Length: 220
Image (cartoon, rainbow, N blue to C red):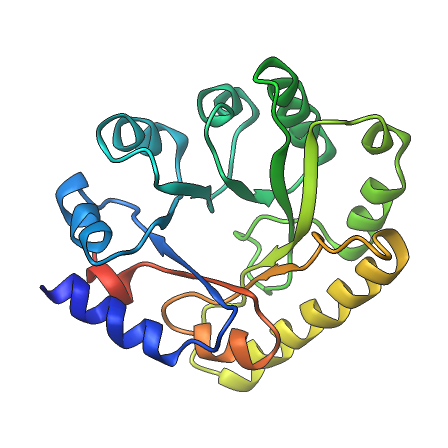
């Protein structure tokens, strides 16, 4: 019941139109089913090797999102069913996603991960790399990737103003990218920013998706 109660509390704080991705890293199928039975259907995983066994045993109407760093050699395992990949951080990875999209006869929704934190351990493209990727002829030739927006992870800190600045910076960059590369494309609308400790700041700064794990399922 704790998972259900947590879900309801968090959902009650989310404005209309904000997608809650319940992150299930290290959580068992039984714990995930608590959220499922409470009516939730959108779940996120950080590792393909953890996602696959869960996908096999859990209901097939779950919409799985890959929210962690994705290695190119793992794309083939999730390409047949993944609803969205949040963590695209290179043209090389996009090429593999497109190749697997061709094999599976589907367009795979993706977000480009932008590095906004000061921590060097975080993955992501910087602004120039993102622009270069979007300008590339390679991308124009990809018919099976569908870029829906951007994702970012703020610095892990108790300095909320710092986190807010990083989210605001990403929102501004999102608007710039949308106007320059995706004018009139209604599907380019997602800005995935905010996790258990800072999702309220992400929402205030324009997030459309929040990735929440521990606040729903408890600490690992």
